[in-house]
Length: 140
Image (cartoon, rainbow, N blue to C red; front, side, top):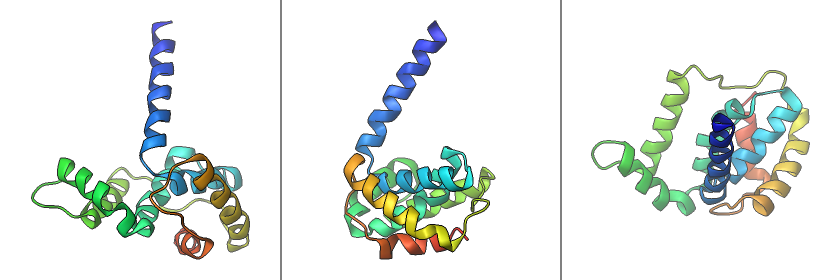
């Protein structure tokens, strides 16, 4: 019972974090990679998180720089943090691309991700399909 309670609390806290961290499009795309390719959700998030953060651009710069100052030496930028995330992804041996993704899947992924991210998860700015497609192209 103690372990179950701890797992329930961890799940609750993760939900709060998702609601406050503006990773909406990464999470929404990751859901689609799981549905289409069977990619585990954590791996799918790792595949797209840095690229989504880059797509947010100036809208996410300040919070990313605040986080960068907490985890990186010197005077890091938002770009430094994104590069650090990419480096961690590589160091951890996480896959960079899902198995079985095809460009023919993009329309459905974009449609579903756009409807999920802005409605269910907060985002620093709304992205369009033209901004999500390069992220998906990078996964081929």
